Length: 273
Image (cartoon, rainbow, N blue to C red; front, top):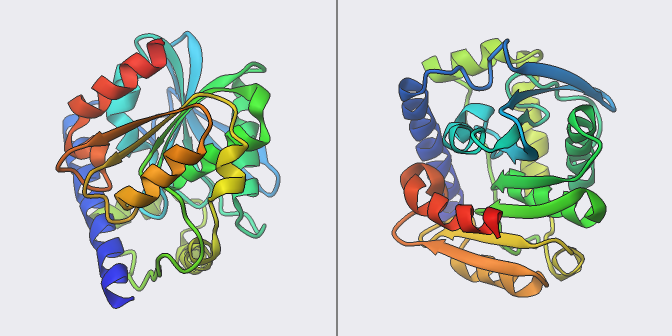
């Protein structure tokens, strides 16, 4: 269990490091852009999102804990040329409130639909990474008439006991100072992490969920993803009725930051089909 915990934290540190490098090279302040930013009330929490481009809508869902809109910069800049891109900060992340409701993927799915409904009354494509991908699975299951396609990155079959998640870290350092400065409730962040720790250790994404998804799904992962191991990802792919599989060689959990060109080469034809 200790090894699994260490692996999980290493992946989070890598994601944070790569996200920081992405911020250095991008010109737009994704995740804190007043020209594109909006808020919507979703139950007990006010959620932040940004809108870019025009065309058919596609909503981006970042990863959990250290995730934020800015990690999706590469996708935003590619997609906004042909799509209306809705980049959402999920509850408890950067400019979105935490709320008081118990964390479930039903809650997260309803949060997504609150943002979607604020922008469009039609159907959307979803692109989610890690926690965002699991949320995407749930949205597609709960709202089949509102989801055209789903791209799920770094999220395979998950049942309690397959992993042990422990967040024994502190929000320290310059990068966390920047993130905390954006948060409406920074003093609640460690309590939120504890709630997320419990949630991740009891969540389930298995046959009942995957078999209920009707839309086309691109299941994607890095070959060396230690948070979503290859067998679990392939299991999810096999259980989703209308699915495609893309495994990017020699990459880990944050596959789109490690080899974005290869990721995009898989996504583009899926979107255009």
